[in-house]
Length: 518
Image 1: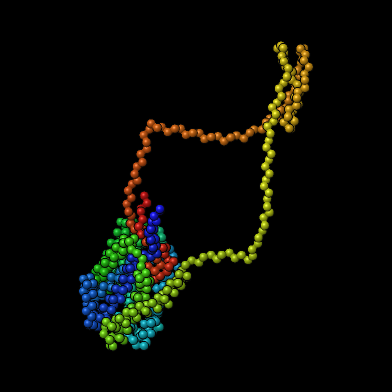
Image 2: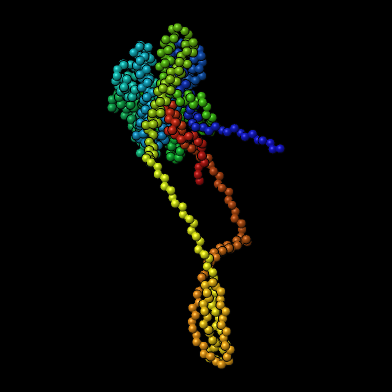
């Protein structure tokens, strides 16, 4: 009786980088919480012990009491941008990459700006940074294209969109560096770091608008750190070069805090350090992580969550808070926010991804059209008849007679040639006479038998090995050392703020580590 062995369940193949999905999902939720806790609950003096309890465990120990624990999410998003978007730009090229980024960034942004403008028209008071919210066609255009963050005076309709202008500046810098990135990655990163340093140090020399540009450029070192991690793990630059560049980028980010380039408090450096630590821990834990639908869904919608959470929640809280206590209002507001996010994702963000994918991908050559099909019958060819086998020719006749002295001995008779059938005729009798006869020799032309085909020669046997010699010793292979993680295979959605999703942008997920070839 044969016992059946249960087969282990097949391991689900991952199609995404799980730690990026988890990080983006958690980051979007932390930003959502921080914008409810600080600009609304704490700023308005709401009595919410549960919020105070969470703040005592998160924001206070991290010295983030002004902006909240969600501040960690921003540098994490920037790290993902540098790590994921750089190989995408290398593969797509400048034109296709620019078109892809333009559609996928600005389509959801246009929807949010129009929704904010509508709320301003009906006087529902969307969230504000304290700056002007003058509503004109020009301000709608500048806020949609995000250039309002580098124009003085600033008119801000969407307060959370300040991170997106940093993304756009990084995309432009990346496209400018593509020729260098294709040949000399180390030189391209060095040029990027030099550009950041020059802009930061000269921010006050060319007017207020250039100063605003310098404030946004001061966040680029975090994206360059993500780019350095990609270049190091994918073997584009040596490990020592990556460590040197990483230290330089980190120093530039700290320098921005020292010279006070648009910093509110001293929590920026700590939040960036914590984000880098979480990113590296996620990279090395990736082989052990399993892909979950929840994190995939939250990650795919993180861009819409980021853009819409503050707008929807603040407007609803203004309407509901006078009618009910805060906990009950939050029970209504939070599901409403995710409902609007789902509508935005299904009808704005995901269609924009599809459009960007169609326009930015290379078109395949059209198949050759066949107007008519013609069938030609090939005539059958008979087998080639084999040539008849050749028969061996008859041996030549022997001369007859005897010799009695030293004269010409023997006598030769004319021997008729053998007939074609190979049967030799009987020789005619010769008269016996003891007298000497003079033999007349006539040359007889005997056909030469054809040569038989030679048999192939057998290969010479190799000389026997010298069994007296010492046997060969097989040396053990050198021990291989584990190398740095292989460049992670990114999924389409896993780019910067979670705001981008294209299922064909990146190859499927594979192993995150590989052996170094020796």
